[in-house]
Length: 262
Image: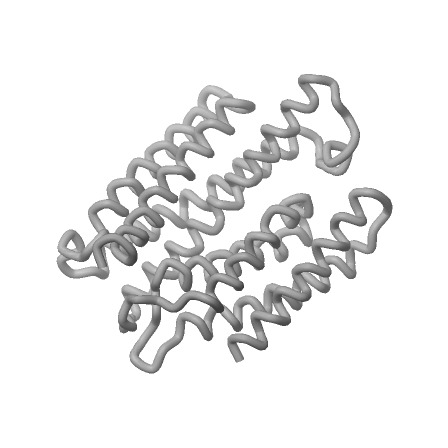
């Protein structure tokens, strides 16, 4: 099931990418592109769950959790693109999704299976959603930086002509940041509420420390947007800084535990 679902996902991701590239050059078939994306994401989720699930619990190794996060990100962007201008993110997300599937099929976790009760499962789910939404916000910030640069140097055309107006792009960025901050707050709170002896769990101090700093970075940015009207490069820099802190905390701790310490 894992191999079949992963293969189907890769094939339809590639088809969706091809249709997206075609739409950049001419009037493409958006419905076909989204349809291929839907099949790809559905198959990707099935493959990711098959990778994570084990008879004794769930594998939360670096590769396994990465393919699940990648599937969630792709699913969120695909669903949101039905009402928001997010099509341009597919060209960055879908190749990463393909890479995550290939890695999950080739690499096995070194971690023993983990049992999850309701509380710990809620923390894991909220964390995955928070990381996914903030990753989308970071990609949106990169697109915004590209758009700013092209407009500043008077280089219209290409991808720029396919992007929404700058104000709409900034508004979408802050919508994503608000959603990500709410989910991150809930994930941090769930960790403190549902894990006993949380500071005694390997890697938690490192991950929680960087998550809290990232939370503060996003909180300052959202406050600055609300009170001082921050936008443009300031918003981009804060977003990417907070995202980098989350990545350092989450992936840094997992990499160290799985490949350096373990």
